[in-house]
Length: 338
Ligand code: TK8
Image (cartoon, rainbow, N blue to C red):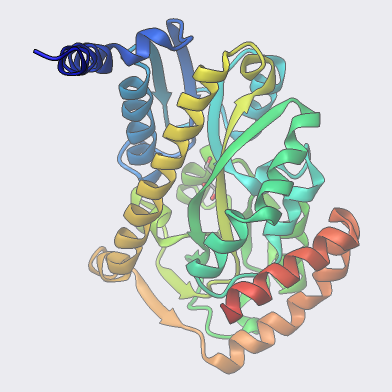
């Protein structure tokens, strides 16, 4: 046997042995990571949290364990954000809208009718503008990894079908604790009240509020159809979720451990968007079969709503900064053209 052949065999054998133990060469310690979220386990959020946990386990050879804790058992979004900043909790996923009090640039995603489809949303959120907004979190003690899709938001209530702007008059509508949402729905004539998501079902059930707005998926998974009669297809805003890590915790991880989390987060994002879109595509039929009365808005009524809401744009622009506002508009225009 030639020297060359012998070396080749040895090298092949070494490679075959090395591959399964590749993670041993990585700087990965046993880790237990609490990953909190607001919806229940049977939701799109819960399914994606599980995919994230599985991917982290796989990539770390079982050393890094994600304990996914749903149904706001670790508290509503705002409480978890504070726990991450303080270092008392490691990770979470929640609405970007609930982060605005901490990082004002996040309000850019609250712009009504910013995206007209998911292709635009993906391009902008996963592009340089999305990254820039995410990176702003670092100075506040949070590290953003990826955006998941919460989705286009639609309006439900118990009072009456909302087919035109005037129908919103006096409807007591729960909104996320976020000034843009609060102002937007006041402009539209509703009696908007901010409330944590974890309190929403009970508030609807006891008629403390008449209505709310969320994507189809959430209306389904949180069983809002049990306590809401009318659904108006408004698609008034695209709402992202964002996966975040405590910066205190993140800074204590090795580069390899950080990579495991980021790669798994990206895989969970791709899964989550597909899963959410598949569910949303048949959700209207599901909600109808659960007894909801559904109406579309005419293009003319949507235009009226959109016109009214442009009032809010100036204050969003001044809050997030004119540069970011313009960059976002340019990125949307590019996504639309391309
Ligand atoms: C879940 C919330 C939810 C949001 C809301 O924690 O509050 O209405 O849409 O997804 O972040």
